Length: 53
Length: 479
Image (cartoon, rainbow over all chains, first blue to last red; front, side, top):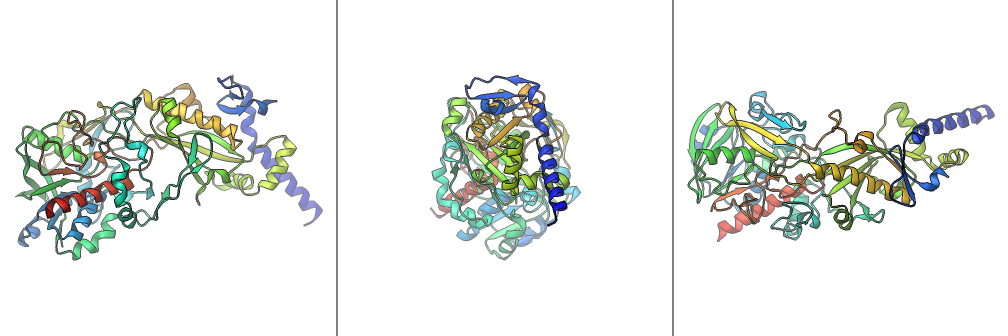
């Protein structure tokens, strides 16, 4: 594999990961604290509090 | 023996002891069982060996309440019945499903799973499956279950040769039992409609109604009306407590530990709640289906990378400071509680070609349905996060209590109840042996006898109940 194709692969994977993470952009619209110390519901996502740290 | 119509059958001078009405999974299973016992049996199939528009027209009806499938689309009227469009997913109701729960009105069966277990080996043979693998604990309240995706037996095709060769079973095609005649203690005869014309009456010592989870109610309601209550003497529950398995795409998820979820070869993982969790929430049974590979084309390529190359994704995740790896679509299917007002009724105005009133199906989801949808998703999402299996998002319409969407799968085409099993004739139609309360010789087979629906597809359980009924009839005849 050439250096150029390595760069292309890394760029493609990084772009792929970014696309996969797009839904997380919506995280900060609607924060709802559910009655659990360790969890929080953000725009429908059920997350650990530590996810937001 | 297979006869193409009633005229051909009459010419054979066959004298049956049992008459089975309906050639779908339940009827054919009972016939298969009686064939092995050598008991002379006639099976009436209203349709032929292939689908026809003319036959299917008899299934037209109206629905009231929540959006539901057209009644002539959600089932099939030819040999093999609705197994002809069955997807083949197999699972048997759990022991818990047969028990009464204080928080589910009208729950509880007069039999338990243990009463069906002696027949499981025969069921596996009929459906061409192996015994189910044990469940695997996944979180504190959820375990992964095996949903067997079988080669969807078409009962008419699988058992046609056996039925054709049998000297004790006569299958009469293109012949509908349009009415049973009863005197309040037993059924005395059946009126027939064959090839578009009145075909007289016949009699047998025992009758088994196995026309499907909608049609069983229709035939008995009509017969009871015509016999002034002489077919189902305790008819308070007849047609009522009808149930489905509502199912919706209710969220999405990122998965970080796919292996722990035990997905099958299609990438589907099925998670069911513990008895304690259901009791604590006060909800009926349900299952979460994580469809881990729901995408096609470019989306599938992206999901593939995340799901199948975790080491690369892990590197990218670290770069982004995230632990998220793999995407999934989250479905929830649940046990609709038995509600008296959900019912099959007869139309006062519309009749089919044989003169039988068409069905009016009254069906709505209620508060418990809403509760299990939201609380079930939320409980799973919480434990999913705590165990770091991934993160789940509940769809807006679920959280906001909006109308149920009708642009996705809405139910399983699972027609249950209407002639439900129970000990109390006021709230049930058949007893633990599938015999109609108060009648000496009338039985029901199929998912219409389900007292509650459980969370899983009904075909495996209804086949087990039909094998057990066949065994009961064989023993009754022998004695």
